[in-house]
Amino acid sequence: MIDFLFMDEDLCYSCKKNKALKYKLCDGCLKKLDYVANEFKVGETTCYAIYFYNDFMKKLIGSYKFSRNTSLCKVFAPMYEDFIIKNKLLDFDYILPSPSSKKTLRTRGFDHIGSIVDIIGKDLGISVLKSFKKVKNTKTQHSLDRFKRAENLNDAFKLYESLEDKKILLIDDIITTGNTIEEIVKTLKEGGASEVVGLSLASEKPII
Ligand SMILES: [Zn+2]
Image (cartoon, rainbow, N blue to C red):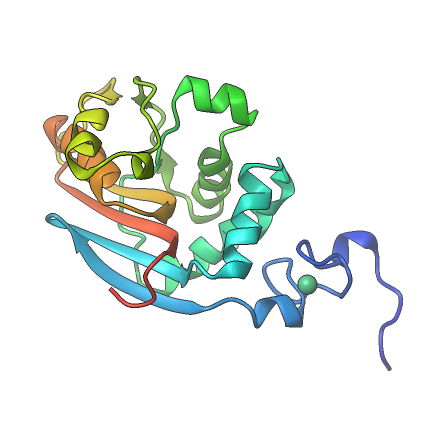
């Protein structure tokens, strides 16, 4: 028998029309996800991207980040979790959300990566690193040329505890340029971190 009666919370978080099957998305919306599972290097750092940043993903992330559709963290968190489990990325001392500056947090009204990482940390039993902050209000990276980009991020991050021999899984939404990751990794390594691996939800390049 077809189940015609379902509650509102069973509805797809994206189209709000059909019943959600996985990641709070319906069959039609799930099919719009372009799974790429890219592995690439940013400097010395191994990074992964789960999906291609196609129009659907762009809309979904935009709705979450800029229209404060905060419940979408329940869509994104299990996407990361499935990838982490499948690729055995569980052996980390800390999971770290790519930090936003105080100014961005104020404008946006919530910590979009932090909210996702809190769920992942709890579900997978990995401690969330809270002592790493963005201390400089940087300009948007893509508005700058490549020389200004590195300068813009100089001393942008600060670590408030020692990470001697600790392994860190760094979580971001999209990797546009590698500069941010490189600067974060630099600060973590200066603080003693032995290994950093980057994981982003989406990548702008289908294959890197
Ligand atoms: Zn849908």
